[in-house]
Length: 449
Ligand code: FCB
Image 1 (cartoon, rainbow, N blue to C red):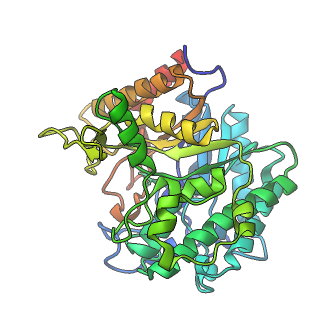
Image 2 (cartoon, helix red, strand yellow):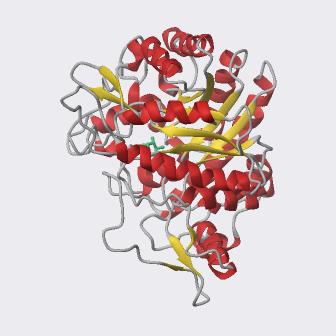
């Protein structure tokens, strides 16, 4: 067995995607509340107002996790549920909700992994300029300190940001997620820099506030490209491609691994980006870099797919996928090798224990005549990906956790409820939960590993 004994076999969710109760018990607005309430933003015209109603059903949800043998649960906190204005007064009902959730998890032997921010930014702070305002660094650090003060008596694992690539890149540059803006390049690099500083300031604040030793991680994303064959040229080409910065003219300019992770773990921005982006960058001081570069305990990355890269011509080149190559319902390529080479390359560059903070697929799941949800495609997907992850562990990469996205079907951002990523099926009319076949398969896998 190549996985360590206390490997964190888990599932993941995010507050806005499951909680509902969007305006209950004193919760403040988030940018996602505002964005989804505007016609034309979400594919099926829905919102997260109710979502999986997890706010009211968390006890049953945790009970189900326990029945399914889940060992660890990665969830996020809604910042405006805890602090309605983003700064200042706490909302007692919000504080209690997460406290009760944490207690329920612990009572059921499930280890909580708390993500501080998974995109539902306080609208009150958005109105003050959000990440473009230099004060956003302190706002986030204060929030992080509060969270750790409140919960670190019971929670040992915290994650600062989920996918800054998305909440900055998709939210403010491509404009396809909340708040749906398309700001200038100068602004976007300033926002990205402030986000990184906020991460660093939060780490410092969290260590200070901690009531027991805590582990802090980070959960960015990025394509995990892999070598077309295992020859050294292809491996080197894939490595280069994984960490290359996006060219300045690309729509997904913010979507690189190195721009978001090198400063955090290595203490400097990647040279190719510094050169390409120089006319748009804010002033970057040595002090800033020292702030960003705080020691953290683990490196998380959300990995869904990657592309095969060949080094045959001397320039890294993507190998076209074969006709009819497998893809998920949302259209993402099924590429299990991403879960071997992703961790390998990331460990090689960053040298920290690796967590797969998200991995999974959407499928066209239906409730069959027998009342069950049969999803052999998700079982096959997960099995193939996990076997590749095992190869990374066998090759000496300290992979310490895996969180399947997602525990249950939920509000998939711009896609609304049209994509089902869960191992548990949710009937949104009745809020009934039905564990899919994959959930039972995963329970057995966890038992065996
Ligand atoms: C990731 C997000 C997560 C979910 C999955 C499918 O980018 O972090 O919330 O939407 O994709």
